Image 1: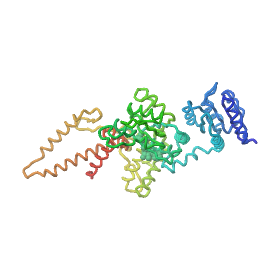
Image 2: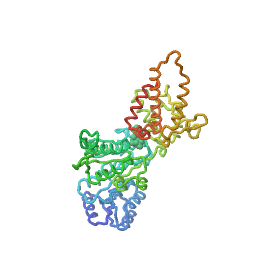
Image 3: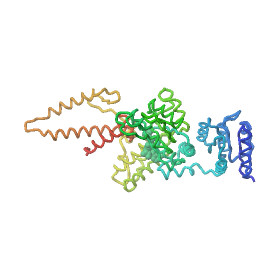
Length: 497
Ligand SMILES: Nc1ncnc2c1ncn2[C@@H]1O[C@H](COP(=O)(O)OP(=O)(O)OP(=O)(O)O)[C@@H](O)[C@H]1O
Ligand SMILES: [Mg+2]
């Protein structure tokens, strides 16, 4: 009888203790109960438990403190949190602290409850539980403990119909994680719709999100369904949520509270059952503090909060990611797998990866194309990785012309410096022209146009490089739409040799 599972029920409501006591004893398990935190701490000294059910609100203690204590003194004991509706946010926190699951009072489905209790006795290791993710979705989790805990929490949260806020630097995999949550949720057979709030102007954003009625604004020639209507019963991923304007924030708040919204120019209330996952690489809490983001909306979005660590905080995973992308890219381009030299690996491990996994993935793809032999070496790596580390001093980003350093930045006044530069260039060009033997005007004109397109494309390429391959962000920096960005890029690249 020594290893017969023992359950601990901690709840100040005696009926809850009786209910679980009855349910579990019927199945032949041993049960101990406690009505206060103090009693619970006492029982933990006396018995070794398999599973503890812990109410979040106790007269003398917080359920989260009991959870922490259990994980400290009996790490093999699984903890199921009992919560009321108002404390769901703390229950989600409990999951992140390692709780097995949480259940909401009142308990409606006894079968589900029984199943959960049985499952808690048969817990696999975290790594086993999340291994599925890697294969199916191209989602590499790695060995970093923080990341493993995060994905494990995400998997549990996925099953609940709650909103999730994913934060993390650019390229850390926020969208990949959102897709993973969707695929582990009950909505997995419905679509996952991804929508970037930062890629639209305010008016367009409202109509894209909520749809519009015919004639509601110039150009609205048809009635249009918005993304919320399309996402009914599905998962909607709202990226760069921090760029939603105050007006959009109010509409979002309303949808989250009531599931209702109006189309632009519409009077009929629409309803949508949408599971929302949002992401941002801004610090949303700080935006709230600065008055730039609504606090009430923040709390609605931030029910479950997941924060992905940057790649530089998980250096042990760099090699694993390199191997993963080497294999993936070789297969996609149908080229034989190449090795990485030790020196190249050493440099890549030392790099700080400000663009995180996206930057790493792009770097591997680029190196694979540049490398002529079988082994990728340092000369196949981009300058920013070689220079930064080899010289161990910061890369100069400014262009030098004579003694002057030129900066074209957000503060660059319309054309001022550029105009000055181009005037010098015009003069040099004009001085070199003579009409004595005739002049090939058409060719000259075409060459100049192609030069302009190429220049524009090169500026765009630099912006994309600066955002580590994120075209939406590059477009944002340049103040153009992603579509315009692709147009200019293609136009210019045609002429690039
Ligand atoms: N864990 C991962 N496993 C495999 N690939 C990943 C992982 N994380 C990110 N990637 C790859 O890195 C790139 C960037 O990922 P993603 O778009 O999810 O980042 P993000 O955090 O949303 O970035 P941003 O803030 O710039 O929008 C994608 O190509 C994605 O496939
Ligand atoms: Mg993203």
